[in-house]
Amino acid sequence: MIIREFRPKDLRRVHEIEKMSFSNPYEIEMLKQLFDIGTGFLVAHINDYIVGYIIFWIKKEDQGHIISLAVDNNYKRQNIGSKLIMTAIDIFKNFDIKRISLEVKAQNKEAVYFYKSIGFFCDEKILNYYEEGVNAFRMSFICVDEF
Image 1 (cartoon, rainbow, N blue to C red):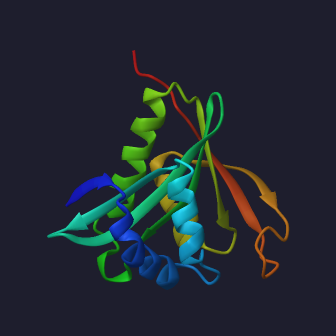
Image 2 (cartoon, rainbow, N blue to C red):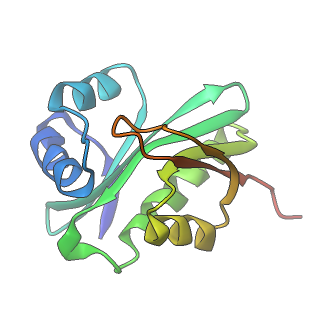
């Protein structure tokens, strides 16, 4: 598996993964706009086939945010999501980001467990965060350099 920067030609495949992963996916134009404004945007591919992606950005001077992370259903449980998020964390650390946050559906126990296994913790519960009135957890990761 190779992780590399997103390229515009990847857009349709990323959108396919987005649609299979979320009940209220980003439209293809929104994904393009996220790339155009300069967010961090990485894809994972196996044999030139995109199997996952992560979108992230610097929210404030020392705070990063994971906008979206998804892996093709046929490639889950192969550490692709972990490798994508760890690559993003390393990039954040290069920019002296101290805290990384994300939102996840509160009822998505699999995703909450996944993020906790990486070192994220629940900051707060946000009521009616998603359009369909579903609650979210805001989760955070503290970037600490090892001595």
